[in-house]
Length: 417
Image (cartoon, rainbow, N blue to C red; front, top):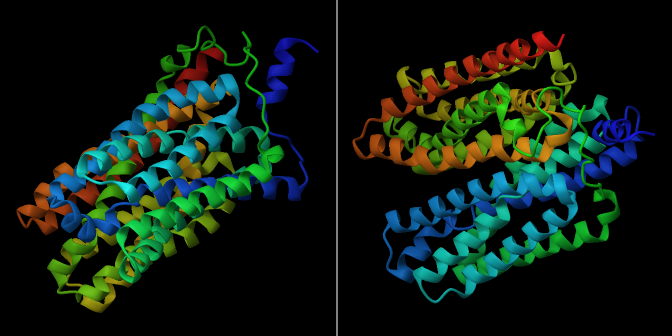
């Protein structure tokens, strides 16, 4: 077998791998993804305790989150190269170890400065997961089950976000914020142990360089950056991160102010959104089985979510209906999620999977770092309808971006054809 054919065989997912084999890998990758999202919310639920413990302002505490995502962004891009060179498994275990150490570091921090250093460490650990996870899924899961793999991957991420406050806040109330963060570190290392015991399922060799695998984008480690569709995907996920950040940080409070929603009910809105989003991802996995319609699924999902957001922001909605509308918005967005990930898969050269996902998904960190600055200013000025209008506009941009990715990809493929 030639080097070229060997590389192509290694890059393509098996056509008919046993269901048990695929399900085992998807479960392990999903577990790692849950830990990544769980770690993104280690500090935010504990802000009331941390504020008193370190005599810090909310701006200073928010900077810890910004620091986390800025570092994660840079690491995510670099880790994609390491995944392609070394294989995903060692990079995955390094990321998990750093997240666990960061959690215990938070728990033992004597001052704000040490918390900032631990945020950097956590950002480094978090930055490896998207290149690792998508490389494993794209190269080891059967093509017919890839949509379901993306669906489960998204569901576990949502569950990770939901798990963080559900675990940390009760521990902080019952014991202390330090015990809560130590518990988080124990959870991370527990998951790492599970993955280590199943490490054979995560084995994947580094890609064999091939002069023919990726068409005209084949010369050098950075040649993939000349793919126009990659930058369209980068922009798409930046806008998606802005939408997600607004929903997580400001949308429930903006809805409470507009419609007089009781505080307890407003607090439920994000949980309802995440639960229904996970449900939408289940159905979205079936829709993503046909790659040719992924742009239309994305348009339908985010278009519906935009209409619901428009109703929350500008219609006379009863307060009791607001959580239900969050659920509808979450279901529609979740429906689009597996097809959203498939956009990147269809735009990636086979021998640069880690690098492509590292660059594209770094835009998530950029969006989550910048969005609070803009929409936080709207909240400070009590422009609650402006928050919802901005959310609608960014969802509309997502739809346009999805079809622009398809246009750019087809334009690039035309000369080759």
